[in-house]
Amino acid sequence: MPVLMSDAGTCGVRPMASQHNTMRVVGGTDAQPGSWPWIVSIQVPWRRGTGHICGGTLISPQWVLTAAHCFINATYVEMWRIVVGASSLLQMGPEVQVRNIKRLVTHEHYNNRSQRNDIALLELDQPVQCSYYIQLACVPDGSLRVSELSPCYISGWGAMEEGSKIRPAILQEALVHLIDNHICNSSQWYAGAVRNTNLCAGYQQGGIDTCQGDSGGPLVCKDRTADYYWLVGVTSWGTGCGRAHQPGIYTSTQHYRDWILVHMGLRPAGQTSAPPVSASGPFQKPRPIPADASRPGSCPFPRNKLVDFFALLQELLQVIKESEV
Ligand code: 4AZ
Image (cartoon, rainbow, N blue to C red; front, top):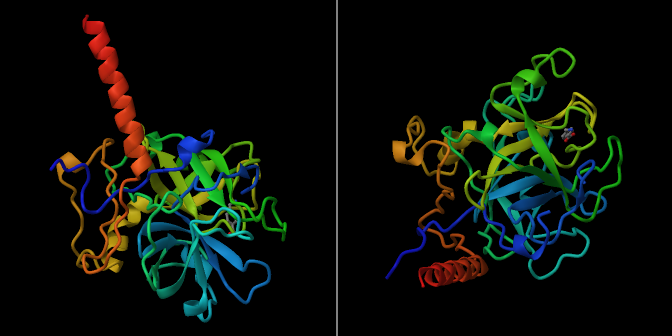
């Protein structure tokens, strides 16, 4: 039998994206349902409104990657809600799956003054089932040349204006540019506060940015050669929102891939990854973080994407056949 995919399934695909033109956050637009199938809303049920406080990203059926600073002074974390597969937080359809947190792992060297190592993992009480609305993001290793990727997108249910207390019901998305850390660290910008474990993304002139409530959520970039997305950043900090020369700062996930694997129990501590040459370089393949072998739930490649692929292949064969006669 021909094997089309590994047991680990897939990551970084947007099964619903063909349904809309791929074309707030500040300066963003409403995302279509299923546009960003790895984003989750982290909610504190006893807070007013939806209780949304941070975003996060599904990286395996039972694990969410988010920001450590979302959990400063957190209490009763096991009662918080993780909402997966949603677009509107006020009208959640049958595609939405809600989980509780079984375990919170914040980075052991997170510093809340410098925001160094602003990264955390959440283990869900039950794995989610992947669907057209729920997919895993791909976490790159150190060999991916992230600065060469584009386009890149931010998304979240955070404030649409700096200082605003109103939160959008519908997920907001925006296109952003990666900005070189040297530029971000110049004197009129962040003057050296941006580390090499950070990414800087947005616009020199401001206007489009993440904001309060977007923290922990994804910064993703499309692979250069194929139709899938890499989770390159976790929304971390910035001065205000949408200000000129003060773009959003993200925790660079590729620097933490080993930390992630160790804390998910998938790699013994101390063992560092030296990816085989075939798996490295800009053409790194999208590898989902493998699911715990003792538990169900990989993310199968979406059927409609395979159907699209075979339809295209058939068309191509037809063209070749016709050009031969
Ligand atoms: C925040 O407070 C926050 N403009 C997140 C992102 C940015 C600023 C603040 C970036 O969670």
